[in-house]
Length: 287
Image (cartoon, rainbow, N blue to C red):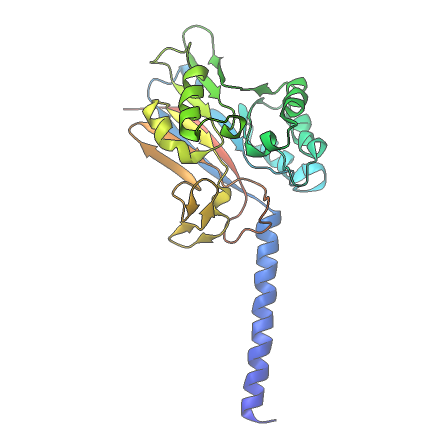
């Protein structure tokens, strides 16, 4: 065999080996998840809520991690949360399996308090009231343009608010978000620390204008394909090279945590974009 033919054969073999390795990498990246730890200092945080631990589960899209989601359940349980936030797209309209996703809540309902807001997929199933009712029966606090207070009830409290996904309205998205944030926090004192659960990160400027302290959001799926240094490639509501796809964003005292989410929808594959569970710990500011 000539040297040229040997090199060609070796080149083809190397190509298929690399292709196989990349395929194995993609499989692992799309069937397992990581945990992202975030600590946020809060000025004037009530002492009773110092080191309050929140787990954010976003964009589950009826995905599974282990039998009956045991991998996800065991991980969340082991992280000992004080609250669990589900920030929309708990289910997927294209392969709707509510019972499968409810299993997560059933197995964790005694671990921590659950709070839920809709995403666009809940709305587009036209079954959102059934979804909300099922969650409510399991003890989940469904936040529909409203807020609740947590704390020790002696003046040391913070507000957790949540808004419906804009798909539920015919209003312009920005106009709708402005309106329902006002509705959600209408009875909350201005000086009280406010947490907002809202599916859509692209409305960050509205959250800043409304002086929300901390937002939990998702929807962007991490940009689906993450390009090193650059970030996400595309996201609904933001288009190409979106700004808000992952991590912590801060502007004028407002902080937004954006989850890359756990599942996929129309696009079934993530690249360099592992699903994630976010753990946020609130601590009293030392400033």
